[in-house]
Every structure is written in C-alpha cells, then in structure tokens.
Image (cartoon, rainbow, N blue to C red; front, top):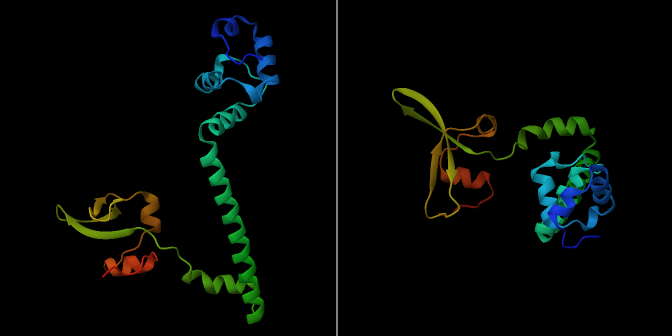
Length: 172
C-alpha cells in the first residue's frame, strides 16, 4: 500500500493495475488521491463506486460534523415515530379513524412560513419576503421571494404575529 503515493508512478500504471489498486485499497487511499478522483472522475474507470470515495473524503475531512448530523437524523426519526404513535393513539382514544383525524388536523398543522409583505413599487403591487439577518440588531432585507417562499409564505399582520407563529415568543 502506498501511504505516500507518488503521482508519477501511480499515473504510469496501466489502467487495470491502477483500478485494481484502488478497489483493493479504497479504505486506505491517500486523501490527495481521493480528491483527484473527485475532481477528475474520468481519470480512471473505477471499478468501485465514486460515491464511496466521496463519502470517505467527506468523513476524513468532516467526520465529527457528520457524526453529529447522523445523531440528529436518528433523533428526528425517533421523534417522528413518537409523534406518529401519539397521533394514532389520540385518534383511537377519540374514536375516529386515523384518516379522518389527519384530515381534521391538517388545517391546524401548516408550518409557519416566511413573512410575505405586499408593497407598491412603480405603481404596481408586489410581494416581497422579509429575510432576517443572523444579528437581531441589524434587521433584515426585503427580497423577491422564491417560488417556494410564495407557496409556503404567510402575510403576518406584524412582528408579534410573526414571532408567535414561529415559536419565538414576543420580545416586546
């Protein structure tokens, strides 16, 4: 195994030898070599999956963050199952089948969307989305909304209504 690979020797190998080496040593490839495969996938007809190389490179570079994301994904999955089970139990205790319960609950479950506002610009009514900055002291911007923001956004009457809808409490 080449711990410190030499590109000139590696490049001089015939494709089948190079591919064989890569397939046998996928878990121990030099990070620079993995990066070369990611940047130039045509470099070799890899018998292995480029996704595996990409995942190993990401893990080598961001392993701790990926572990945290995996833990969060698992926690979300557990919470989703708990919510589903609670929902089924409430429907059963209420004597309603789950489909009817879901239909009755749906109007009350719309997630709080971005804040849309109507304005007059050049004599025409336009819709803008308020985008808050990370620093609460600097406010935010009014931007042209994306299609998704138009579909999920809401017209809030004021900051108090917006904060309440987003579970932010009321700062005053």
